[in-house]
Image 1 (cartoon, rainbow over the protein chains, first blue to last red):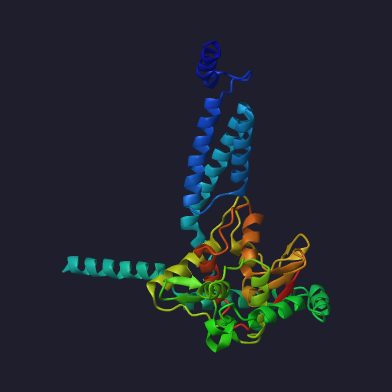
Image 2: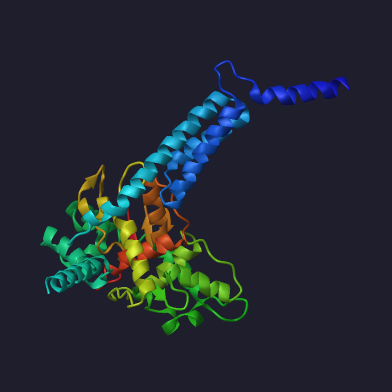
Length: 102
Length: 278
């Protein structure tokens, strides 16, 4: 019974455990999910950037290793880059015609 | 009466605005080739198939020396062997194409009214393979590049003759390719036209930027940087990566439409492939 009780305690406590720098697994997962959603929006516009993909991979790898602070930082970067690519694609929907020789 | 005039004027204006948004490949072709002729009045149209060597005398001289022993020769030999080999069912590539596949490269990419899609010569080769029970080939290099090298070689000197039929699906594909070509993308914020129209003929570090006009005429190419043969779609993927944009899949409609637009812009110029580039 004792080991079971310890395991249950750990399961309840671990997700909320804050690292020394305040980053948590829950926080990292949330930031990764937000970045993923932005990247899906960028992909739908046909304008994913390679640095966005690289930042997202870094976030996932850091999360796997348990480095939640690094995961959150990389996920935030991926989200920021995806945002910029969405802005670029949206602007280019109108601007591209300006480059056409007449 | 006044109201009728206003309605009539509005209708005229609206139809004019709609016409401006309608794809007009013939007008685009005239403007595109006219742009290069105006910018480089001493360069004859047919010379654009030589890519970056159109502009640099010294590099052109070096290239001509290289071409005395063309680096793509191995691909021509291999491509001819592959092309002439029989499939397990006894048929061959020739059975899939008009004129037995000889001297037809200038007509590609084509619009297929049955599927409503653009078909490049590479995707037509893969369709032929699938129809004969074989797996598709990678569209970027290897056997596909060799087959394309041989088939393109049999079209050398023939004027590019890509057709955009008066079919809304063909016009939409053409327009999609055009939009892709002129749209900035990637973290570096470049479009295809940034380098190959606006900056064509200028140096980017040690390289002269090739003009978009005539660009497709020399593909597939042996590229010294690759140390290998590569197809047009390999180059598209490379350009996208260079501007830090995630590339599409080689057989994506995006790249087929881009090839459709870009090759159409070189209509009338002679096929010069396979080629050799730095």
